Length: 194
Image (cartoon, rainbow, N blue to C red; front, side, top):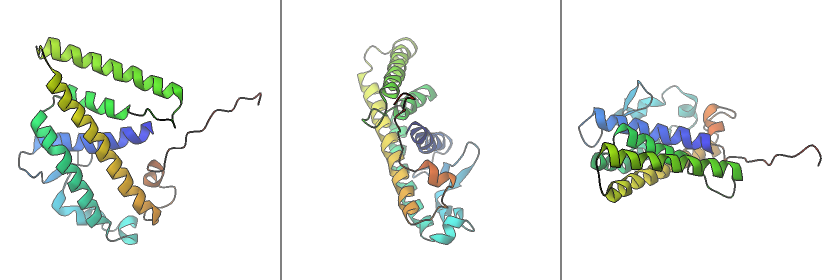
């Protein structure tokens, strides 16, 4: 779960965060697909040309464009309104990545999540009080939490999109994409004396 959160929160969020800073035209025409590669929304149909997923499901390009456009349309207005600093973006991403408190997780992982959340909120308090010199930063923090929620929701949206295609065997079994989108399997440790 943590790996999925990390990959998809950073993939969605960081690529669009950097694109909103690099490109001023709206709607955003390009998104960073990696640290050094930007891809134009208008060229999504070429992204899967010659690939196994593209051969197995030609509609993947159209559907990908729809999903990535929806993600863009959720995140860009928040980034434009909030204009988060890199530290604020990293804080929001960290909170979203460590939002794993669920019955499926071990108590140890949930405790780790709580520790990281507390650290991030303490650092944000210091940032807003000492660096930004804000006496009342409740509104700013609320906007940042809206960003956290949007990062989580767009990540889930992308995972669900990929899972749907995986159901129809668009991705090769055992491929990186197929493995990373698989529902998390939390297994209990079994002691030797049982």
